[in-house]
Length: 120
Image (cartoon, rainbow, N blue to C red; front, side, top):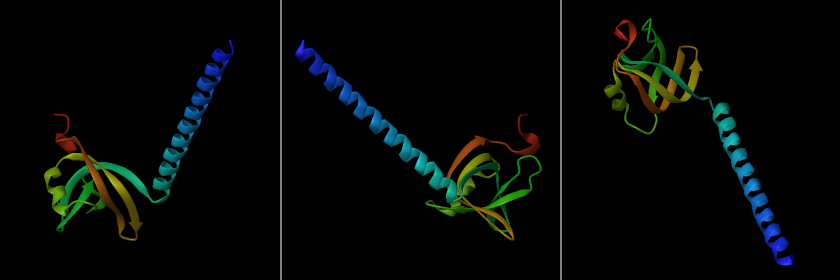
């Protein structure tokens, strides 16, 4: 009987440690999300276009520029393969007097078409 309760206590203690470890992991993830929000990390969806020698994200319906795109961790030419595609870009958004710019870390293709031809 004493051995069984000792085994039970050992199992109970290890379960408690697991829960504490899990809670600590959730806190770390929460802190990362808060840190990303403070740094301006965001995502935007639109179409990739090239205007005046720069890559831009345009509204997929009106095709008006939404933000200038800057590559972060890959060559600027990496935007070329997404020209005319609807994408979601993730990175750091900066706003200044001339508009928004996104320092893009990742690009995810949403659709191969944009604007009026989308869905046809």
